[in-house]
Image: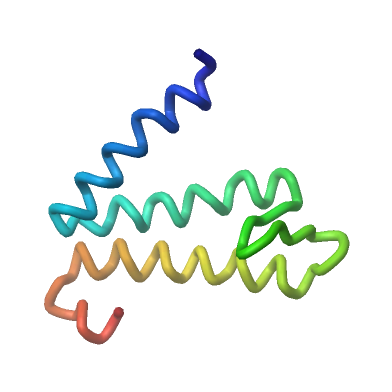
Length: 87
């Protein structure tokens, strides 16, 4: 099994447990992680694949949205007193 597949098989139950326990910062890290391959490949997956060369505005909007969601989710976990304002 290659490294990417192994990572996926580990991440799946971790995300399920994180959701069940209300540990949403883990999901924030996932949102931030999705930015890396999108920037490297020029492709983001929204409802369907968005290509940076074909639709740059939507591509960057999706990447920025992931970044905002990631930061907001992590911030809501780190600063629960402000969570109602953040989310």
